[in-house]
View (tube, rainbow, N blue to C red):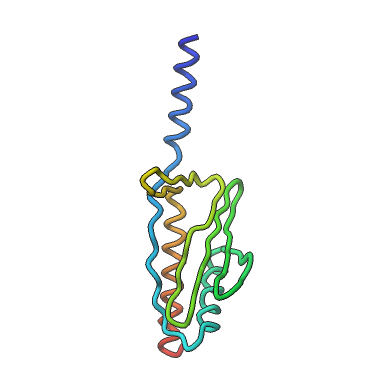
Length: 133
C-alpha cells in the first residue's frame, strides 16, 4: 500500500512539473498614433487575425478575442482609442492559470509569448500608420 501511495505521489509530481508556468506579465499600454479609434481598431483586428486570435465580440472600443488549440483556450480583452491599445487577460482553460493569495498571477509560459508577439505586431502596424504606409 505504501509503495502504491509513493508511486501516485511521484506520478502527480511529474505531471505537475511537466507544465511550464510563468508569471503572467502585465502589459503596458501600447502607444499608437492613429487619427481615429476606427484606424486603431483596424490595426488591432489585423494583428489578432495574423496571430490566430478569433474576435468573439466587440463593444465600446473593446474587442474580446479567443485563441484555442486542442484541449486549451484563452480569452483576452483588447481596449483601444486613437492613442493607445491595452491588452488584458480574461480567462483560460487548461493553461494552468492561478492567482496566489498575494495577487501574483501564473499561466502557461506560451501565453506570454503569444501576447508579446501580438504587442509587437500592433506596434509595428502602428508605426506603419504613423509613416503613412
